[in-house]
Image (cartoon, rainbow, N blue to C red; front, side, top):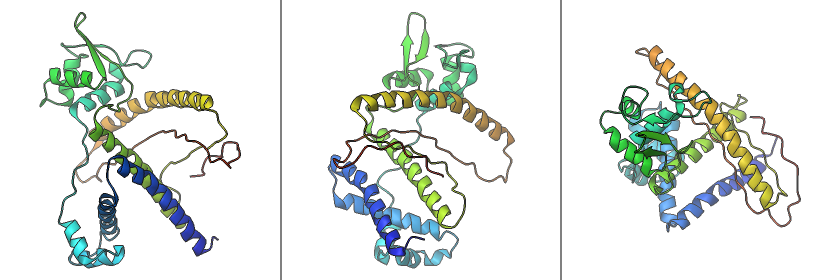
Length: 290
């Protein structure tokens, strides 16, 4: 068993490593310690409130103050002040894109999204757009998809074609930051939950594995990215239609009194950087056992 002091040292090292990219993000956007400190205080209060969710509500302030080390005054201020901005929600245009990607009836025999006539009976872009929302005109949704570079419109054939197989907007910084918060936040939440389960002898609840290698040239890294991109496209082609089928089946089977629906996020990423000068090349690590 690892001595407690070693565990605390490892925890501090892990914490500093996690905070470094956040600090870089703050500095890149012109923010220093005050913004990060406020965000950390809010996160501590939210985590403490969740940890004591079944306790008597009348003593929340004292309980949260004791757990977090924040003063009662700070806890009161935070609990009565809404965060600066809300989590970004999926827009109708991106919902249309996702449904187009995931619906088997909108795919050709090779599993690729079909080009759709702009108007008319199903399958058409107009029918697809109205199946997502009737609050926004299909023409407006088409214009937004074209603006985001997700689709193109051919006026000669009056058809709409998807231009990309994933949605990461290039010019909308607010939504990009939303993706960072949600994607990295869920990844970190999965890792923390797996650590908590491991410390209590339980099976890790989330799938999380990685492969690490060093001693690679820039050309090799570029080849690796191409390989991973190819694997991601294959995973998306298999995963999105299956998820769509599951959602539709669960909606049909839902009954009053059922537990609230679950959400899931599946991701894949690569990261590369210059290795420390003293690092020796090594073979890829074995995947984590979780």
